[in-house]
Length: 238
Image (tube, rainbow, N blue to C red):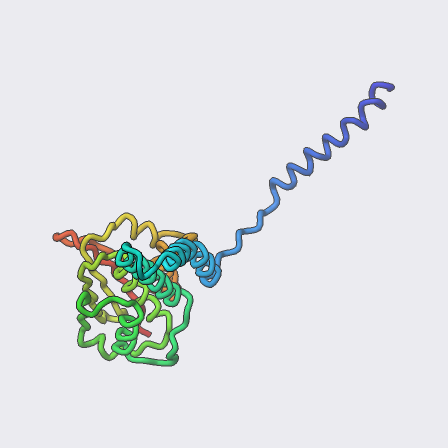
């Protein structure tokens, strides 16, 4: 009796602790809240703009008319400025809203997307099928998808030519972007991400797959006999 009386107070807390642990292990764990496009964009901008801005500030501080390195510093400053402009184009296409709203012709959306991407006209060839020319676009996400695709080809393409083919097939509108020298594994890795990247590397492609899915569309890809990579976005024609 004495042994039982002495050991009971010491054993009870241990039993309660084990019981609580077992109960907790069977409770449903709250799912992690999905990251919004806006949150991902702000996080990526903060991550990616820090280094080029610091480099640009350093270059401008050293820029002096009597400095023998002036041409080199100017070229570096120009490169950093171009890099920042490219990131802002991606950010605008990912989270920004086009200025014009309402129903628009596909030709108008294509023209606006090319202009927003910064891709030189000499680097891009666009072919629009006869049926596709009459398509009316009523969702701003279509322009965001196109701008992101073109901006990605511009930023990572190192000046390589880009071909954009637009066709209408049954109840679908198909955008096929082709470029040589594309690292297919890297592109597919960005497209298959379930969560946005922490920086702007791949954010545009992540946005493309997300917005394509939201519009009820599909993604496909292929490698041509010449090794050129083609990414195809199919959107329902509603």
